[in-house]
Length: 311
Image 1 (tube, one colour):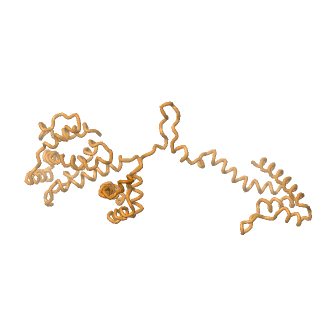
Image 2 (cartoon, helix red, strand yellow):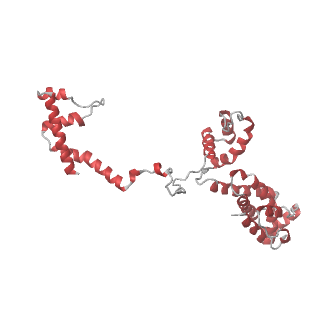
Image 3 (tube, rainbow, N blue to C red):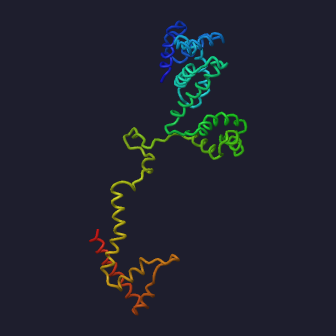
């Protein structure tokens, strides 16, 4: 959306009333200057147009009500320029909210349209900001939305108390507690929202650099290779070898060799210690520790051959 889109939409509504006040526009400043020249409605005029719209669905009356309040949208939209979004887009969204308010306005409630429309204008602008301020949506609950739109203004109110000498622009512990109490949220939520608003979006897979080389981005170290097909096959093979393969290899050994391997490599006691040592096994079989080591080496060699054949 651009200022040209805002201007063309207003021109359509002004076809039957006030068309001479709104000549063809080429920029946002001309649009703002034009809508500020639309006359404000008196209470009697507003009530009359509202009743004709409600009772007779008179579109001419709807046009009068909308056009006379376009300057209100411009005024409200200026308060949200700090989010870095185009002013023309903010005005366009606010105009949508204004038209929704006019459609729902009841002149018999004793409230002026300007007061009733403020809610709808702000609601549409808020929704637009939340969808477009960041690529990643960051305020999804009602409490988070309230915190999002109040954090910046409340932080500005604390600005005089910030440590100017050290250029510190973060909230102090007392300010965080005060803000959390005022907005009825947890202090952790205040801290998290401030950090997220202070940060920016990061492309997971950035475009190649000007010299044609691939740019290094988070996608390079955030990707999880564990669920790739080759990784899953390798993991399955390891699991099979660790269970069925070792069991088959042990079955090929003679009882003494199998016991030595199990005691030396596979046994774990309840206290976390391993099985018998070379000297313990040597004493049991009444041979030297070196002989036990030779039997172990030969058994391990035979098991590797069995595992290779099993795989």
